[in-house]
Image (cartoon, rainbow, N blue to C red; front, side):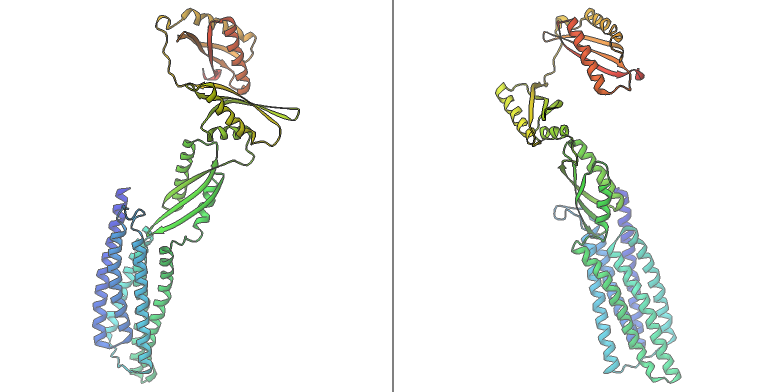
Length: 473
């Protein structure tokens, strides 16, 4: 990224520096012609090139400044210097046009100036025309490549020079023709050519001025907000796009997007979605993107998701959410995990607050029953005198592998492990079942198997069964 930025900065500065040299050469040639011909068209061109030189210098300086990285006083970078430079260049163009208009009317109606056309003047103007065309194309290429408004303005200066030089050559040619063929009224062609140059400058300058003023006033590029909003709104995980704001500084865009996401989404899920949104917007326009996610209830949100969202908002961990509809009344049951260091009064207060929030979710008759259990944080260690109980492990494995005759879903059980931990005997194992079984049925079978083990071996405090598809064995 740094190498690409350095390459961009070097190419932009090189283009701006060559523009300064070209403008200086053109100014010298046209100043010489003014002295030799006294042509208003050539004078307007010389003035135009003089301002081109000033504009080129401003462009060179602004390009150097705009490529500086963001700092404490300029957190959005220095890109606005390019926009400001382009605006100043536009003002210089319009001032040039006003002076040309004034001088043209003065020569048309008040003061006659004798013009001395010559072949040398035309040749020099043709050389200037070639320089203008070459620099305009080169600057336009770099401006488009890096979206540089300052270089675009500089290219516009040279482009207007192309048209104005053509008009000046035509004006001198007509004056020359008037002297050769004795057509007195053609003496005004030079002043009229100057007015034509002014018209071109005003029209082109106004177009650039409007764009640069829009950039300085943070006017959003036309259609870009809608394009970004549609692209982001079509992404999975985005419920709605609440707002998109776009501003431009130089060749960089800054985008702020506010989106709605499911309120049950975890912080990690929202962060991953934000990264995906930033990447998607970057595919539309190279930009610095800030995404703000608002939690919302999705349309048609399931009751269980709403309950989990309420618990999540209160920072509570719940599981085993079930509900039963009977005789017009809804019975909701769930398990709430609380800090194991709380007493019953403190734990019950948390459960009651959660119950009140759940009751607000429905207008009808609802009963909520919350089972309170400790949120496990303690990492236990096996008792030293009975770390492993191999005989009991073997007996449990034998029992479980006799049960496939009662449970068609069960294929086999293996990896049985028994530990005595803090005076409690804990058993765990893996049981293989058909992978196509619904998880609800698998849960029922594992619960029944756990009950059978505890019934046969009442000394066991807890049994944990890990179900796995037989196809993966």
